[in-house]
Length: 294
Image (cartoon, rainbow, N blue to C red; front, side, top):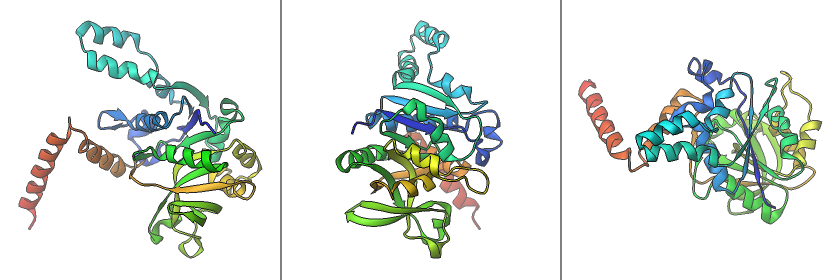
């Protein structure tokens, strides 16, 4: 099962990042020197994805602009002899084939995925949420692709969360198969701790058989009229195999100011071009804080 397409739902308002996200799509807020969504696209491409389908909404035209050509800018960089900068700009539109789908109403994550149905067609595809950066080797979504390819059906990436936090996530009912791999027997969206079937949460990386669209058609909207992807997974796993694979790596919720800041600092510390200056700054900051601590 070759997964050639990935869907990135990017139509949300980004209310957790207001007011910064009022006029700038939250997905374009920078983490070090590139927007969050670029990390997600690069993860998908590293896993073998050839076409990236971005689900957008009104006011998010800048997402298409970012991954498009900029002939004027390229000409200026070439004239100035800025070869490295020119290559970094040209690389963006060469990463993959980009398709943009407009979600006219924000009616839940499931609704956003459903909006991409005609672009995906009847073939397996990945879904990556841009609020979450998953830094791992091999790419997390690629691990899920391999499990789905070997075993058939769909696969999701999960991570264990503290019991006190299960009510913030979709939690799977797992059946252990081997180390780090489970058969999903059900999914409960944001359960109370006493109702949670495990502490394994969905992480925003999915690989689906095309039948997930049929499940999305069947699940009823919630109280707010939203179609939840977790409800569709719960239905899908009762009809065909859905597997869960354990995430191994670093995860950052860049949909919050603190998460965005943490991701920027920690990823800068992993880069040889930025790490020395960031370490020096952090040492100075720690010393300054120590000096003012009573």
